Structures are given as structure tokens and as C-alpha cells.
Image 1 (cartoon, rainbow, N blue to C red):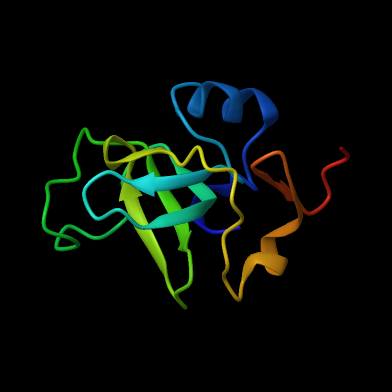
Image 2: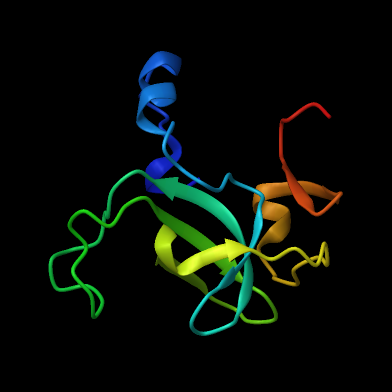
Length: 116
């Protein structure tokens, strides 16, 4: 995972830190303004970019999501307020999917190591 994976946090710290996120890793989402689809690969409870990053103020706009963009070779970093669930249950096509996920079931990507 990327920055928000909480590798060094205890499970209790992670529970408090991530209790206010709307989406989870593996959710297929769509950008409300630009319309692209993608899959969430990581979550940051607050903006983790530098102060000059992006065109909008980051303070108070968390959580932020790392999203692999469908049919492209890049990922984006998007504030929660710009995303909604895709709802199509169609898979995302991206060359890095296998790095994060072991499969796709019922519209959700299954993380490597999860037992389902």
C-alpha cells in the first residue's frame, strides 16, 4: 500500500483514524466532475500532498483516496467529496491491479491476503 496503509499503527489507532471514511480499499468509484472510474487502493485520513499540490486547498478536505484510473496507466489522488460509488459492478482495467488485489467479486476488489 501507499502512505495511508497504517503499517506502523495499532489496530485501535486505525479504527479511530479511519472511522469517518465513506469508501474502502477495493471500492470502484467514479469522479463526480471528471467522470472517470477507478478502484481505491489506499486511503489517507487527511491530505498527504505538499502545500503546492493540486489546485484546491487541502486543509479540512479529507479523507483522500489513491485511485487506479480505469483504462489508463496512472493513479490519482482525490478528495472524498469528489467521489461516489460507481454502481455498475463492472471491473476496472489497470496494469497494477494484481499488485493490490487477488480478485473481483460482486463489484468489489478483494485485497491480497483477505480471506473471502
